[in-house]
Image (cartoon, rainbow, N blue to C red; front, side):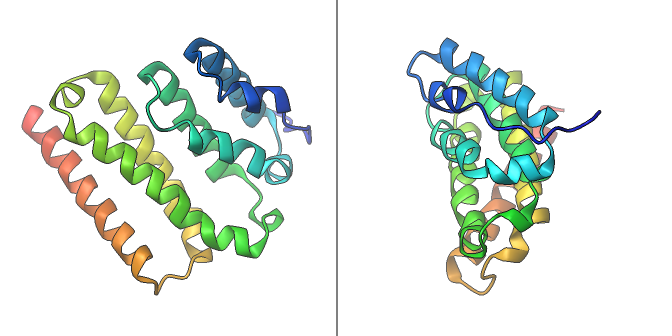
Length: 171
């Protein structure tokens, strides 16, 4: 498909933060449609407009919205033209996004009710996909020698092992 250089719909970025989960879900679906059609350059130009509300909404949202948010995050992390992101911004991105993903994964792995649901497993798989895209495409921009980066990587490995052990115990 021809990926267009179009502007991000600002109203959808605002509605993504709406307290009404159904309004936010509709905005998320429109932003996902935009991200699927937009060129990497267009995603780079609208990077902050997409990333900020997406990360802000990862806390405390219902599962039917959380999956869409994670899909949007994966698309933005995987498809953005990184050359369009300011070097200082790209350097801080890894820790910022990793912190949100780690918190989300820890909550979903720690809840016994959540661990039993297929929705929780799908959420964790999408969070792992986002973490993979973050590591693959954005880790090189970070200061890899910092203690926070090493701690985040160690905790990510710990959570992945915990998820795999829980998954093998169910199987």
